[in-house]
Length: 127
Image (cartoon, rainbow, N blue to C red):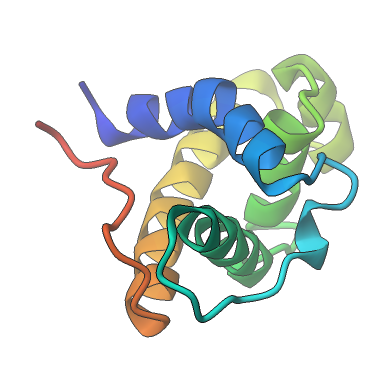
């Protein structure tokens, strides 16, 4: 399975669970802080922290609206055809930008987890 599909499935299946476990929701998940503990709850909290940092690190320009695409598609659960209107591109180019956004996000998540030594790493690579 392609890492992009794994990352998509993460947002559909695991992200809601991550919010539930950490006591957050899609409106306040960015208020999470890094915790120094080594227990399971701190790990989940720190993964959410790294995810937030990774999303916020994505470019968000008119030519590279990666942050907007990720936030709208996977956090706000907006349909792709509505995202096309938000970013001002047609279907094919929006699909291309969506794939690029997932590539950038996957790299950014890994970088944030390594920077803060949050292990085990979330894995989106091919099996």
